[in-house]
Length: 207
Image 1 (tube, rainbow, N blue to C red):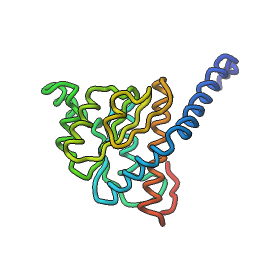
Image 2: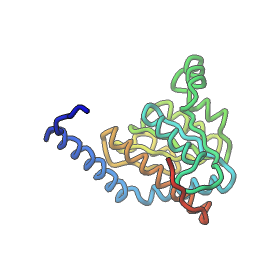
Image 3: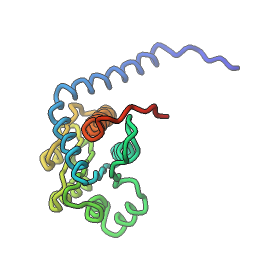
Image 4: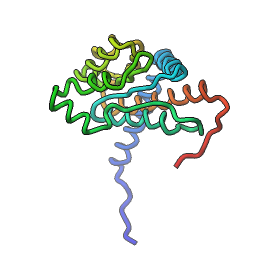
Protein backbone atom coordinates (compact mmCIF):
# COMPACT_ATOMS: atom_id res chain seq x y z
CA UNK A 1 0.00 0.00 0.00
CA UNK A 2 1.41 3.36 -0.99
CA UNK A 3 1.70 6.09 1.56
CA UNK A 4 0.91 9.72 1.02
CA UNK A 5 2.47 12.66 2.78
CA UNK A 6 0.35 14.49 5.31
CA UNK A 7 -1.71 17.33 3.81
CA UNK A 8 0.12 20.62 3.75
CA UNK A 9 -0.81 23.31 6.22
CA UNK A 10 -1.96 25.48 3.32
CA UNK A 11 -4.38 22.79 2.10
CA UNK A 12 -5.72 22.25 5.61
CA UNK A 13 -6.25 25.97 6.05
CA UNK A 14 -8.00 26.30 2.69
CA UNK A 15 -10.46 23.50 3.48
CA UNK A 16 -11.06 24.74 7.02
CA UNK A 17 -11.72 28.27 5.77
CA UNK A 18 -14.13 26.98 3.10
CA UNK A 19 -16.15 24.94 5.58
CA UNK A 20 -16.23 27.73 8.14
CA UNK A 21 -17.37 30.25 5.53
CA UNK A 22 -20.12 27.87 4.41
CA UNK A 23 -21.28 27.50 8.01
CA UNK A 24 -21.14 31.27 8.54
CA UNK A 25 -23.35 31.95 5.52
CA UNK A 26 -25.87 29.37 6.72
CA UNK A 27 -25.95 30.96 10.18
CA UNK A 28 -26.51 34.39 8.61
CA UNK A 29 -29.22 32.92 6.39
CA UNK A 30 -30.97 31.52 9.47
CA UNK A 31 -30.76 34.92 11.17
CA UNK A 32 -31.82 37.04 8.19
CA UNK A 33 -34.23 34.74 6.36
CA UNK A 34 -35.96 32.62 8.99
CA UNK A 35 -39.38 34.21 8.51
CA UNK A 36 -39.11 33.98 4.71
CA UNK A 37 -38.02 30.32 4.86
CA UNK A 38 -40.95 29.41 7.10
CA UNK A 39 -43.41 31.44 5.00
CA UNK A 40 -42.31 29.71 1.80
CA UNK A 41 -42.30 26.32 3.50
CA UNK A 42 -45.84 26.78 4.76
CA UNK A 43 -46.96 27.80 1.27
CA UNK A 44 -45.49 24.55 -0.05
CA UNK A 45 -47.38 22.63 2.63
CA UNK A 46 -50.64 24.31 1.57
CA UNK A 47 -50.01 23.49 -2.10
CA UNK A 48 -49.25 19.83 -1.42
CA UNK A 49 -52.11 19.47 1.06
CA UNK A 50 -54.48 20.86 -1.56
CA UNK A 51 -53.41 18.35 -4.19
CA UNK A 52 -51.06 20.63 -6.09
CA UNK A 53 -47.55 19.81 -7.11
CA UNK A 54 -44.17 21.48 -6.96
CA UNK A 55 -42.29 22.50 -10.10
CA UNK A 56 -38.65 23.36 -9.43
CA UNK A 57 -36.28 25.00 -11.90
CA UNK A 58 -32.89 26.62 -12.27
CA UNK A 59 -29.72 26.70 -14.37
CA UNK A 60 -26.41 24.94 -13.80
CA UNK A 61 -25.86 24.20 -10.13
CA UNK A 62 -29.33 25.54 -9.45
CA UNK A 63 -30.70 22.97 -11.90
CA UNK A 64 -29.06 20.30 -9.76
CA UNK A 65 -30.59 21.87 -6.66
CA UNK A 66 -34.02 21.81 -8.33
CA UNK A 67 -33.59 18.11 -9.10
CA UNK A 68 -32.36 17.41 -5.59
CA UNK A 69 -35.41 19.09 -4.04
CA UNK A 70 -37.87 17.36 -6.36
CA UNK A 71 -36.25 14.01 -5.61
CA UNK A 72 -36.58 14.52 -1.85
CA UNK A 73 -40.31 15.10 -2.31
CA UNK A 74 -41.07 12.41 -4.88
CA UNK A 75 -38.87 9.91 -3.07
CA UNK A 76 -38.53 10.57 0.62
CA UNK A 77 -36.58 12.83 2.91
CA UNK A 78 -36.10 11.26 6.34
CA UNK A 79 -39.47 9.60 6.92
CA UNK A 80 -41.25 6.75 5.18
CA UNK A 81 -44.35 8.38 3.70
CA UNK A 82 -46.31 8.58 0.45
CA UNK A 83 -44.62 10.13 -2.56
CA UNK A 84 -45.27 13.82 -3.07
CA UNK A 85 -45.85 15.27 -6.56
CA UNK A 86 -42.75 17.20 -7.61
CA UNK A 87 -41.03 17.74 -10.94
CA UNK A 88 -37.69 19.34 -11.81
CA UNK A 89 -38.17 21.23 -15.06
CA UNK A 90 -34.42 21.22 -15.63
CA UNK A 91 -34.14 17.42 -15.78
CA UNK A 92 -35.26 16.48 -19.30
CA UNK A 93 -32.54 17.30 -21.84
CA UNK A 94 -34.87 16.62 -24.78
CA UNK A 95 -37.34 19.20 -23.47
CA UNK A 96 -34.62 21.76 -22.85
CA UNK A 97 -32.87 21.34 -26.18
CA UNK A 98 -36.04 21.16 -28.26
CA UNK A 99 -37.54 24.26 -26.70
CA UNK A 100 -34.21 26.09 -26.66
CA UNK A 101 -33.68 25.29 -30.34
CA UNK A 102 -37.20 26.18 -31.46
CA UNK A 103 -38.04 29.13 -29.21
CA UNK A 104 -34.80 30.31 -27.60
CA UNK A 105 -33.16 29.36 -24.31
CA UNK A 106 -34.89 32.18 -22.44
CA UNK A 107 -38.20 30.39 -23.02
CA UNK A 108 -37.31 26.86 -21.91
CA UNK A 109 -38.79 27.04 -18.42
CA UNK A 110 -41.78 29.23 -19.31
CA UNK A 111 -42.77 26.71 -21.96
CA UNK A 112 -42.50 23.86 -19.45
CA UNK A 113 -44.60 25.81 -16.95
CA UNK A 114 -47.22 26.09 -19.70
CA UNK A 115 -47.03 22.34 -20.20
CA UNK A 116 -47.09 21.19 -16.58
CA UNK A 117 -48.26 24.04 -14.35
CA UNK A 118 -51.82 24.39 -13.15
CA UNK A 119 -53.48 26.85 -10.78
CA UNK A 120 -52.80 25.65 -7.26
CA UNK A 121 -49.34 24.29 -8.06
CA UNK A 122 -46.13 25.95 -6.89
CA UNK A 123 -43.01 26.99 -8.79
CA UNK A 124 -39.72 27.06 -6.90
CA UNK A 125 -37.39 29.25 -8.97
CA UNK A 126 -33.71 28.98 -8.07
CA UNK A 127 -31.17 31.56 -9.25
CA UNK A 128 -28.07 32.66 -7.36
CA UNK A 129 -28.14 36.03 -9.13
CA UNK A 130 -31.90 36.46 -9.26
CA UNK A 131 -31.53 37.72 -12.82
CA UNK A 132 -31.53 34.65 -15.09
CA UNK A 133 -33.85 35.55 -18.01
CA UNK A 134 -35.32 32.07 -18.42
CA UNK A 135 -36.09 31.87 -14.69
CA UNK A 136 -37.74 35.30 -14.72
CA UNK A 137 -39.84 34.31 -17.74
CA UNK A 138 -40.95 31.12 -16.01
CA UNK A 139 -42.10 33.05 -12.95
CA UNK A 140 -44.02 35.50 -15.11
CA UNK A 141 -45.75 32.58 -16.84
CA UNK A 142 -46.49 30.92 -13.51
CA UNK A 143 -48.11 34.06 -12.16
CA UNK A 144 -50.44 34.37 -15.15
CA UNK A 145 -51.55 30.77 -14.56
CA UNK A 146 -52.28 31.16 -10.86
CA UNK A 147 -49.35 29.20 -9.46
CA UNK A 148 -47.75 30.01 -6.13
CA UNK A 149 -44.30 31.46 -6.89
CA UNK A 150 -41.33 30.97 -4.58
CA UNK A 151 -37.67 31.85 -5.06
CA UNK A 152 -34.25 30.93 -3.75
CA UNK A 153 -31.68 33.53 -4.67
CA UNK A 154 -28.68 35.53 -3.42
CA UNK A 155 -26.81 38.73 -4.25
CA UNK A 156 -29.62 40.91 -2.93
CA UNK A 157 -32.32 38.98 -4.77
CA UNK A 158 -31.97 40.57 -8.21
CA UNK A 159 -35.19 41.03 -10.16
CA UNK A 160 -36.52 37.66 -9.06
CA UNK A 161 -37.12 38.47 -5.41
CA UNK A 162 -39.62 41.18 -6.27
CA UNK A 163 -41.64 39.00 -8.65
CA UNK A 164 -42.55 36.08 -6.38
CA UNK A 165 -44.94 35.46 -3.51
CA UNK A 166 -42.08 34.59 -1.17
CA UNK A 167 -38.31 34.82 -1.63
CA UNK A 168 -35.38 33.54 0.40
CA UNK A 169 -32.40 35.78 -0.37
CA UNK A 170 -29.18 34.26 0.95
CA UNK A 171 -26.95 37.06 2.31
CA UNK A 172 -23.90 36.31 0.17
CA UNK A 173 -22.43 37.27 -3.18
CA UNK A 174 -20.47 34.04 -3.68
CA UNK A 175 -22.18 31.51 -5.93
CA UNK A 176 -20.92 28.40 -4.14
CA UNK A 177 -21.91 29.69 -0.70
CA UNK A 178 -25.36 30.69 -1.98
CA UNK A 179 -25.89 27.24 -3.48
CA UNK A 180 -24.85 25.51 -0.26
CA UNK A 181 -27.37 27.59 1.67
CA UNK A 182 -30.06 26.85 -0.93
CA UNK A 183 -29.73 23.11 -0.33
CA UNK A 184 -29.94 23.69 3.42
CA UNK A 185 -33.16 25.67 2.90
CA UNK A 186 -34.60 22.92 0.69
CA UNK A 187 -33.88 20.39 3.43
CA UNK A 188 -35.55 22.65 6.00
CA UNK A 189 -38.61 22.82 3.74
CA UNK A 190 -38.64 19.03 3.49
CA UNK A 191 -38.65 18.79 7.28
CA UNK A 192 -41.54 21.27 7.52
CA UNK A 193 -43.51 19.42 4.84
CA UNK A 194 -43.02 16.00 6.42
CA UNK A 195 -43.88 17.28 9.89
CA UNK A 196 -47.05 19.01 8.66
CA UNK A 197 -48.38 16.35 6.30
CA UNK A 198 -47.12 13.16 7.93
CA UNK A 199 -46.70 13.84 11.66
CA UNK A 200 -46.86 10.14 12.55
CA UNK A 201 -44.18 9.05 10.08
CA UNK A 202 -41.01 7.73 11.63
CA UNK A 203 -37.51 8.47 10.46
CA UNK A 204 -35.98 5.86 8.20
CA UNK A 205 -32.24 5.34 7.67
CA UNK A 206 -31.22 6.33 4.14
CA UNK A 207 -28.43 4.99 1.97
